Image (cartoon, rainbow, N blue to C red):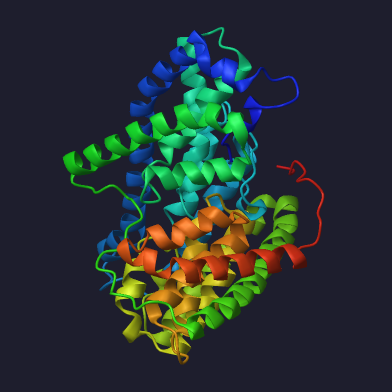
Amino acid sequence: MSAEPAAASGPESPDPLTVIRSREYVAHLVLVAALGVPISAAAFGFLALVHELESLTYKDLPRALGFDGTPNWWPVPLLALSGLLTGLAIRHLPGTGGHRPAEGFVNSGAPSAAELPGVALAALASLGLGAVLGPEAPLIALGGGLAAYAARLVRPGIAPRAGALVAAAGSFAAVSALLGSPLLGAFLLMEASGLAGMTLGLVLVPGLLSAGIGALFFVGLGSWTGLGTYSLTLPDVPHTPDPSLAEFGWAIALGAVAAFAGLGIKRLSLSIQERVDRRRIAWTVAMGLTVGVLALLYAESTGRNGSEVLYSGQDDLGGLLAGEATYTVGTLLILIVCKALAYSASLSAFRGGPIFPAMFLGAAAGLVFSHLPGLHFVSGFAMGIGAMCVAMLRLPMTSVLLATLLLGAEGVTVMPLVIVSVVVSYVVVLRLERPSAAPRTAPR
């Protein structure tokens, strides 16, 4: 995945303040502003295509074949096809499909122009056909790659550092509206890149400019096309009482449980990934079949729609909160187990981002905890999101914001609880995590 801003710093870098005051930096801001519109349009089109593929393959196609609704077994062949197409794209197209989601958010640089088709096709085959991943990582890579390529076309002699700055701004634009706020998307990229001091300001200004333009364009396109903005939102969040002492205790417990669960998911996915790398196509198909079978098992055992196990979970978060009374504890536990295993399989072999499935799993776990005395279900929902996100992403501030901004005004009420659960989960993960070598280049 690419955020690229790390390229703007280093021992041989010029003083960031000097760069910001230069005319060339102003020229780069103009270029970034101009590129923000087409890149955000491309990101909107990518999200619209993913959404249409989901609807076409899971709902429209079964009906066209004469089925009365979607059969419970439908995800099995669908995910096998997804594995085949994704494996072929990774194996035969340049760039190995982009970011490897099992390894978390890694600043691997913007993909080249030759690698962009492979990134897009691998992500579409994964996300559009049911893999348990989100669109944020492909969007960041595609936005950065498109911006870098456009910058070289407009200014053939652009310096590598300036190109990296423009690529970072392209990533900001692409992900600007996805998480519900351009500020949250920008914060995700900045925290993942580890920027600080004046270097942060050097990248932040063009990034925010590009994100703001991108978010405005997302809203405009959503209104003009009638397709919506594909932004993370929760309508009608119930009123939440002020935190109680008991809820602070549950925040500690939920944070610890999420840390162990997140670490288990990550270790399992990395272990499977080693096998996938050795026999890419066969193992990717096998992982697709695994995800499909898990969706079938969930549907057969609970009587609910197997699609709750599939996809990123972004569109199901609102229904999970609004319909919490319709989920028994047993149903939630089966959903968590099936979704977590499908998430691990998807992380190991497919292409996409890790954020939204982590949010969904955390939210479901929080609802399970809310059946215990002294915990309101909205508080549990928010704490679970924050704790699971930090367990998977290792980004504490972004995890707090993901859990609280999602709830609107009620997010302010639950923020102290979310902070406690996030801190506990983060510290436990860091204590338990084994030191590992830098990620190696995977065989294709």
